Length: 396
Image (cartoon, rainbow, N blue to C red; front, side, top):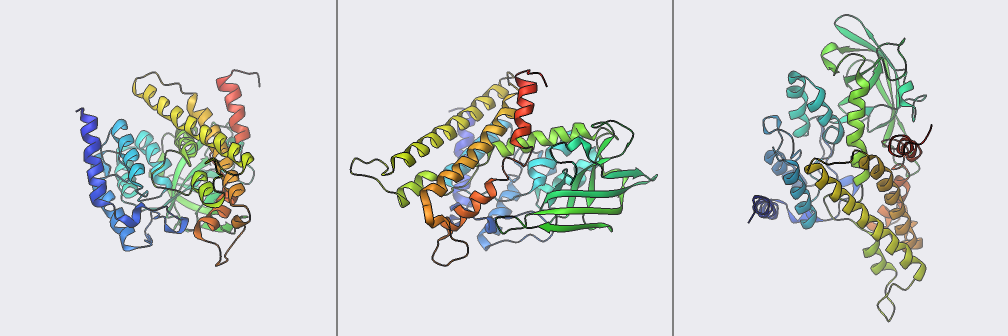
């Protein structure tokens, strides 16, 4: 038996023993455990599951043990994710600090910054939000105008960010700010960490078509930020931003695919809501074609992620694959929601009605929220432009 096979057996046994049965069911949005000073646990089991994974270092399995991580290599971390999916184990902790900021701080932060922020992220003690887009700088992010003036021992920040996910609930925000107004576009931009409790920081929620207010506009009015909160070099924040976006796009590419925990999917929905004919086929032929095309596409996406992973492990990775998979993955995730809506029909039209079950209500909201998938992390249109330019070498 190989070392990895032995590791898989050990992981499986640990998960079986430590993940409560209630944490092996499909998770709803209001059952997610988000990091922060005021974490909310939907149940005692959710709290127990989080604490066990935190103490094991598996909220961030690939991060260094001395900083609160699990110290796993990439292959071991992949096995952990696979075994969690096999057993239906829920993700124990949600946070942009885990998915985006942490890897950037590990790469660009000083030793003092890593020791200040990484353990807090691993333990879920701080909730992070992202300050990138602005009212006048969305797809063209490099035209951002939020400025940070050098005042000697601190920066003075003024400006506004928009589409800041859960800014009204976050403890800290990582921001792109302009520190050299005379520089061109990407030059003169720096990467700052800002405490949301600092005087001059305020947020206004934005109501979405789903009825939720997950996004906010964030304002900075003469906010004093210590120089020690600068990640990377002054005026070189675009490099940090690109590294962070790489992790965000990887996350977006994997949405609905290679993620832990069970979910209510099109095949299960088709069996429950449409049924089979006498020959054992789905009754609706058109719907059957949509379902087959979607399942084949998701299978192909999963296999491509696996191939890309193996190539990376063997030092022959194609850096263009993540660019393509972000577009392909998010677009197919949107189609998944379209297929689910088609399968459920009028049963997906409920809002708060008691006659609709959780799966039906979540399908409705999932379809509405899916429209954001091709915007977050860079719009599909911008992503296609990047693919055309960097991958295919087409003229601008």
